Image (cartoon, rainbow, N blue to C red):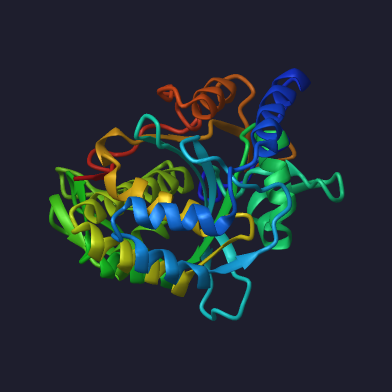
Length: 355
C-alpha cells in the first residue's frame, strides 16, 4: 500500500504561521554583510592562518545557478540549505530530484538539524496555483521550489545545493568509505543493496548509493525470513539522513588541511549552488562541517498524511507537522513525531544509523 509514498498535498497551516516564518526569512535577508567580498575572503584566509587558502581560491570555480529568494547570511547566523540529490546517468541531463533535504547549521551553538521532505509531497505550484508533486516542482523551477518550501512548508531557505548521485559516490569514496550501524542483514533487490553482516559496517560509494536509493528494503529476521520495511519511501529518507550523518562523521576524522582542500575540490567538480552563496560562506560551511559533532545532529522527517485525492501521494500533516517545523526553524530539539501515523514501525533490525 505504501510502496509509492513520497507525494503529498497542499498544507493547511494558518496564514499567521506562514507569515511569521517568511517574515523572519525576509528580515534576515535584508541584512547586509559588512565589507566587500574581497575583504571578507582575505580576512577569512588570514584568520585561519592560511589553512583554508587553497580551498577558498578553488571554490571560486563552483557552478552557480540563479535561484530567486536566496541571499547572503551574515557570519555567525544560522543558515538553512535546501539540499537536492539528483538521480541522473548523464551529467548534461537535468535529472530527477530523488532526495530533498533541509539542513540547518548554527555556527553559534555548533549544532545542526536535518529534516527530510518526501519527494512525492504534494504542494501548490506557485506559478500555476495547481497541485504539484515536490520533486516535479524541483525539476521545473528551483525558484518556485524555494517559494513553496518557504510559504507552504514554513521553512526559510537561505541557499540551495544540488549534487547528482555520481557526485555522492565520489564523496563517499574520497573520505575512504562511511560507517553505518545495523543490527540485521539488509537487502534491496531493486537498488542492488545487500548487507549480510550486522554491526558497524563500512560502505563504499556504490554501496552507500544503493542504500540511499533503496525503496524496497528487506530485513532478515531472527527466524531467517526476509520482511519488507513497511515504511517504504519514508524509511528511505531516514536512511538518507543516516548516510549524510555518517559522511560528516568520517569527514571529521580527516586532518583539516586535507579535508578542507579535498572537500573544496569535490564541491567544484560535483555541486551546483545558488548564485547568492559566496565563497566566504562556503568556506565557513566547510569549517562547520569539519568541526560539527555528528552525534549532536537532530533528525526528522516532515510528518505527513495521505493526500486525499490520491492515497499514493502525501500531504503535510496539519496536526503533527507544525511542532516539528517550528523546532527546526528555531534550532530547538526536534520532536519525536512519527513521519506517518498509519505506517507501522520498521521490522527488527531495520534501522540504519551512523556509527
